[in-house]
Image 1 (cartoon, rainbow, N blue to C red):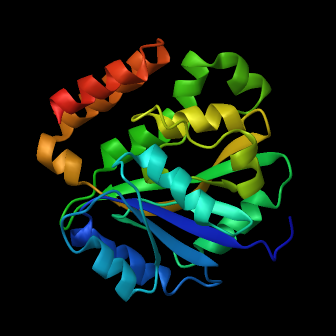
Image 2 (cartoon, one colour; image 1 turned 180 degrees about the vertical axis):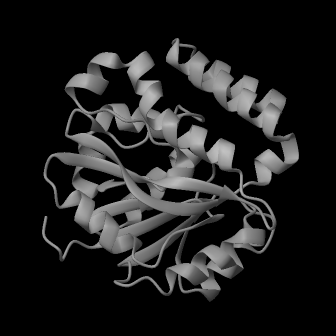
Length: 247
């Protein structure tokens, strides 16, 4: 790929009116710009679609409010050389497209993501942010050591703004639509067969709304529990029920 690589941004959304405008506003100042911004709505009952349309985003709707389904639908709609999956409450730096293009210009890299800095209106969750960044490395080392050592596997999660070449995404089957949780980690494992996974040394700003709701101790226990259960082979359907029960 050359520096003329185009990037499509895909945003899965469900009732994201509170934070979506801020995210989309930042995307209007990207330099260079994204080729397109696609908001995939899973049945919002608020102003999510109206806000997306007001920022000239392409709106796609799905009959399932499941991120894996939504992101696959957005990828099908996308026409860029690369795909970037962005949460509706996450802010990227103005040079995000340049970072993505530079990272994917290395043919040995199949996928990348950013360091997520979790912030609220008055608080930065330094401990949770540090743990989430370290988890990118220690989780595959613990649970997929062969892929970590031989294939350069790193596990990226939704808040890290995952990106990859469109061709690689479809070649490995995209997100598994049967998975409602840990779908990004599953995709990383599949993409690691096509190249290394990189966490770039740049930050994005993610909302701390779940940590604020649960409290930092409970939130980190939830994240750790789900990660270890997944690593031990517990099925996605079981993890989904567990996650729903503690939300």
